[in-house]
Length: 590
Image 1 (tube, rainbow, N blue to C red):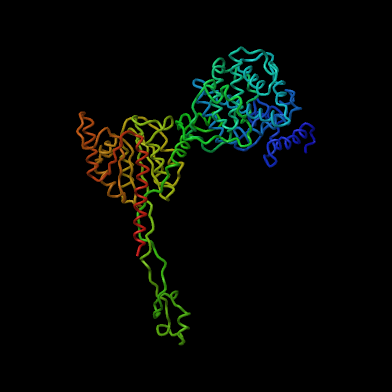
Image 2: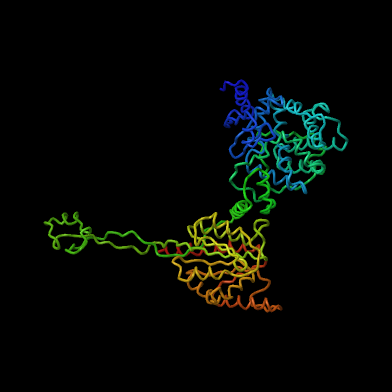
């Protein structure tokens, strides 16, 4: 215990605050901050307390506490911050989901989602503490009560007054109009009805606040800065975000039958004892842009490109399958069959002294000396040799930018890459567009992050296949069988142009198929079948070149639109994996 009386008091109250939530709750002691410099270094620039979900830490600015006259409310302040760790949002995943749901409910004011999330979770926590513990949460707001307040502050305080049955203007600074009184009643109903399913309640709460936020966004941020204890709760987070959300409809609380007068007699469900998000059917997927903005709203310091890599890695996780493999004979352990005569000139290491002495005669080299005879059983089941993956993804102007919207070529490519790497293969990934617009891994690699960073880049230029790289990769036969996969559209016809040396693309293409040791696959978004006659000369020329590639041996997989590329990637991996497994099983049968 500290010799500082103030700190000693807060340390003692910390243990009491933990017990208010659970007898078995364990959190490390808060980070106590004593001056402005320490608070700024920890990221507390406005609020007197805050949390960090990644480290599960509470931070308290004791200097700010004293200046605001809150020294006597250590139990209330600490119990509230603990509530953020155990009730709402409780963990990083739920915090990101909360922000994403609120952003969808704030069209035009999405940037205020962190503020709304903070106000909403504060209501949930404070109502529980006021009802079920000795904490006097209203005393905190009495000390923070301004002489004049914004409409949003007035509404927020009136919601507390209704929840705790306090007389009007106990916390609010002035009477509310009829419309605002109705909103305050709806706000209190949201907290009571959606205490367990608070993710749905968040959408209702955000919709309720929208008109107040639109009046003066800056004033809203300024008024509640002192309460912003979850503003940077995700600081230090290095994990992933949330690629999809539960199916929650955006609905104004006045239109929600769960909040109507008929439900007033229903039992309240505001206890967090078993407060978890209700199970729902899968909802909408977030776009990469939204995924990134939700992470930033949580205070996560991450670049757009790194967020995009995480997005696609998360998105393909449900579809992962082992990558195709080829069967090769497995080496067997030699089995001893007997002995034969060891003669001078044989390897001395092969001399079997035990067998020689066991014969009973004096050891005479070449006469009574023996060596073991071994045989190899070739009937064992063949092992699997994994094919490497050489992936070429079109990044021209006809393709979506994977950092802003869902790109199915990128998604299919990520699925193939991760499947290959998990199976033990190496991958080479190339993103290509116009001349000199080519980004590739450093040859065939085992680095997942490196491969995905290439896949999630974007050029958006013209179309020119990287023939130089293809030529250099397959100048000689590959030692490891390799699957060559191209994700594109009619732009793949640029493979049959001449390279920078004047070498015909058709020659490079044919050599690739001869030297890859596996197979070549084109997955193409084409408006019509390859044998169709088109009405446009330029398209007819492209189709003639693609038919030449098919005749060389490229396996052409036509898809209608980009989305089926993901289905191709799933079926491609499954088909090759199951075929190799069946071969292995047949080889093992007597």
